[in-house]
Each structure stands twice: as C-alpha cells, then as structure tokens.
Image 1 (spheres, helix red, strand yellow):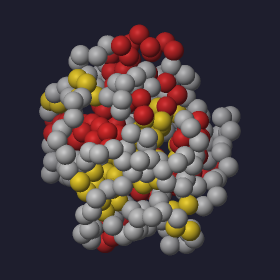
Image 2 (cartoon, one colour):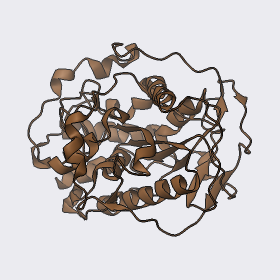
Image 3 (cartoon, helix red, strand yellow):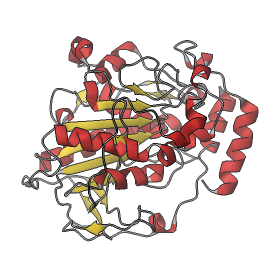
Length: 379
C-alpha cells in the first residue's frame, strides 16, 4: 500500500497554466440560475481537467458559472487531510451559495481525489486511506433537505472510492471496484440522490476499476466532456427549464471563489458572451459556517435507496458563462464516444475483487512508466 501511495500522487504531476497562475480580482458574487462546484484531482491547479467540462455545461445556458471547492491537495499534502478539508469546505460553500441564491440550481463535479470529495459531500466520509492515514467523518448534505435538494446533477469521474454495481454507475467500469470502496451507509446516502448522480468509471482505469491503462484515468474530459455536459443540461431543464429567470440574491453573503470561464475554452471555439459579469474576474465573499448534517446522524437515505432511479447513460455536461445553441442530447442507448475505444475495449478487465483496499492490484511497472511520461509531458 505504501508504494501505491507514492505512485498515486505521481500520476498527477501537472503543470499549472499561466492563466491559473494569474491573480484574479475578488468582488461581490452575483447569483446565477445554474452554479457549478468543481473538486479537482490530486496536484491539479484550479480548476484542473474539469475546466473544459465547466465550460461545456454552461454552453447553451443563459445564466451559469462555476466555483472551485477549496482544498489543498498538491503532492506534499496528506491525502486524508486534503479530502477532509475538501468535504468540509464543499459543504460550507454549497450551503452558503444556496442560502444567498435560493432559486439557483446546483451542479457538483469531481475528478479522482476530487470525486472522493464529492462522494463524501453526498454520502458521508471517513475511513483509512493512503499510507494508513485516517479521515474522520465529516458533514454531508442530505438529498431530501436544502441545499442537497437543490442539487440537480452530480458527477464523479475516476473516483478512488468507486464502488461496484451501484445504480448510478456509468461506463464500462460500472462493475469495477476502486481503491477504497464505500460502506453500506455511505452508499445508501448516495443512492438517495437517485438519477441526479452519475459515477463515471472506465473499466481499464487503475484507480476506479483496477484496470491497467493509466491513460484511461487521465482522459475522461478529452473523451466524454460533451456527453457529460448534455446530461447536466437535461437535468437542469428537467428541474425547471434551461433558461429560468435570474435568481434574486437573498440578503446574506457567502464564501465562494467564482471564476469566469473565459480562459477555459479552447482558442478555436467561437462563442457569444451574454452574461452581465466581467469575463476576467474571480468573485469572493465571506460568511460564517452554516449548520450541516453529519454523515453519522442521518439515516433516512437508507430508507429511500430502493426508490433510486437508474442512471442515465447519457453524458454529463460542462459549464460556461458564455452561451451558444444548446447541443443535441445523447440518447440513453447511445454507446460511449467512439474515440474512447481504449476505455470500452477492456470492460472485462474490471472485476469486483472484494470490498477492501488491500485487494486492489495495480500494475506497478506500468504506473511508474506512465507517471514519468505524464510528468514529462506536463499533462
């Protein structure tokens, strides 16, 4: 397990972009009809690989932006401390924004270690992870009370805590087992979100499914971004339309880090900006911590688990403050993106080999080689 703990962070040796290194101006945040919260992967600069997903989700929506869930999860940061911080900050940020913008629809997305965080926010956290670090239980959001009930879509990609055969699992790794599968109560809490939750895992991903193709842990947003964005937009529309009236802010403040999406879009993409906020500003405000629901004290989710809906196999969406015509949605029976053959071809390689992290087997030689390649290429 110690060698896995060393290799896992090395997998994400990323180079921060010049855009993210620039200091963004802080100002009072305004409400949007759709607001996306992103939890980044290990050692990624904000917003990480999910930046393109955020841009795609907001495409076609008249009032949409995103913010990063604040967490220190660089190479030198302890894994458990990082996810505990992300869970607590995520619950705080979501609650604060929801209180100030009561009519906004909320979307959550997390990648890899960030997917662990999103799962903890929805289902509850706690456990023993890399290098035997211990994460205590923390606050979570109930699916049936605010602000959890305002979450219209939540996505996890390549989660370290992916658990096999859950109704919300998507892609060929649906039956695969991640490094640290969740316990029964956490799974029941997550199932209470029904068809609002999707857990994306490729069968060949070594982190979420025990596969042996490291690239398939890195390329979710190269392959599945539009599919995911379409699904989110469908969920937004189902919750009350994709162009609702602008949310009126309540007379309270919130702790947020809301970033414009102007630097997230590839330069070859042409869009029309229709939002009223500057595309070059970062928005930050502060407030006191809200009351939250402890993952240990709420059990109602387990009674609603049986009624959870089958997950849509359409893709999750991406967000931007800029708009274009809404993309056509993917039918529920559509196959995965044809460019993802490397993910789809080895579904049989993801086997449920038990519920403990100790049973997870990684190809160490492959991870070392690919990790070095990733670091060299600055992926």
